[in-house]
Length: 358
Image (tube, rainbow, N blue to C red; front, top):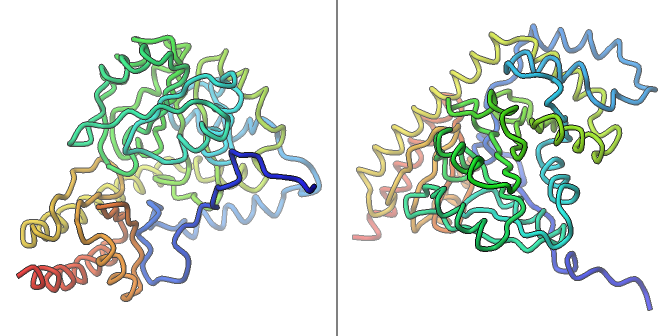
């Protein structure tokens, strides 16, 4: 008899993002901003001097120092990962014992539950309130009831675009001994980070990424920020050379341009505001089709609509990609010109759908 796949992977399907070429891509919450010519030239010179025959720095010390300088923290609190996904996998696979219960929330990033189940943890899911608010008191009650060892969630949240305040996060972290993993991938667009308080807690890990406001999704660089004990453990269990020479070098170079990073974040917030305002106008004009546009503190906007599939398909026909969720659409902020093009096409599509409703 040949090898038989284990039960936990036998029926899994590979993650499949939207494929194909599109004139406008607003489906993955990427930054629409590309690196400036000056920064590209700087990177080119640095790359030309790299010793590709050598392994990269296993702790990415230079990158940690630069990231810490930008965000006002100590490099001793940083662990670098091959994107935040690797760090989520490590936290599930190494920071817990087998069968330790994990708590996630819904709606939220689907990979939290995926990696928990893959690591053979019972995964409990806390439903959010009707307005997508996370009830921290309910979280603490579920942690106590189910003996939760780790809770993981995003703040601000993907895909809802909503967030909870640092006071609410503090209440959660201080109200339990469970490990709280706070994914702040979109916090560069808001002002409620708990990053500056990381040394106060021994049960908190904050995840950050270079893929959103920093505009480096192609590098796959993420960070886990935690107290010294957790950081030592994370550095011990990760793969020795998990982040390559090129990603370390390029990320460090971009992070050495703080004015550029601030400008990028401001432009992305402005773009999201433009998109959100335009979508709200369409919702008021076609309420049967666009039932609700949710306020956002990220670089994307969520819309509730019973016509999610029809709208996504109609935009695909016009060479525009957006993300569809059951009963919802998520649209990333693009350039001002891309936003306006999408809004113009949406008005045409929504008018047609509204006409069918009579």
